[in-house]
Length: 334
Image (cartoon, rainbow, N blue to C red; front, side, top):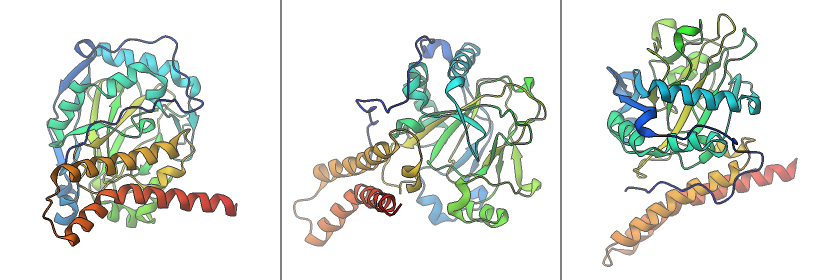
């Protein structure tokens, strides 16, 4: 059941000011797409057959893939540095910027590039689309000033799939390595002393080093693609102050049949417009399923089957309504 990409909202959330001057994205000049030498599957990580069938792709994470040319990496770095003054600090991710596509047309066009999404779709054996929540399409992570802090602690993502792109030359800094855990989220939660739902929070404990893979990016412009909600990952602390910039591009599967991996807690984040984005995302899923039902429903189908299919089609929108009402009730109690 294939979805069409969800267009950006007609209005921009408050606080997201666009860059006044930036490069213009040119796929012929800025992209350099090369597949990975290795991929890890969910089966490699120990996920069950049932869990794998419920996922949009059997791929857990790739080795380095080339995404940006030298000119593309330079342009992305220029944009990231221009936006740095608008960044913020956090408990888990030390220094980051949200809503990249609202702030930068270059980043918006890059993330949504048909050449890039088609390439990524081939790599992970699943059609991908720019994330239906625009604030999740591009994050930028910067190096923290405090060298005692990790760039990002062990965690699972609140969205299903993302590409982590190294924008800075990786030979120019020491430490700050991207790592992932070869195991399931359930196993990682147990080893880290938390619950599966707690894996999106800041976690300072460590995982067994023999189960950790360190990604060696050959140069700026290289990336990894991962099912970030099912791959526990981090970026270690820098050993000395230096520039280290990565961009995280968020994606959704074009096939809306698998369960939505987006965590409901995302609606409680403090990002501007996040509640409306979450509602639009869930409505988009239901709208796609309703359109499919309208086209494909057999007029001779039994009543019970019709009720089941209709209920399945609207389940995402109903879930969003329940989550948002629950949040509203909590606000009233406060």
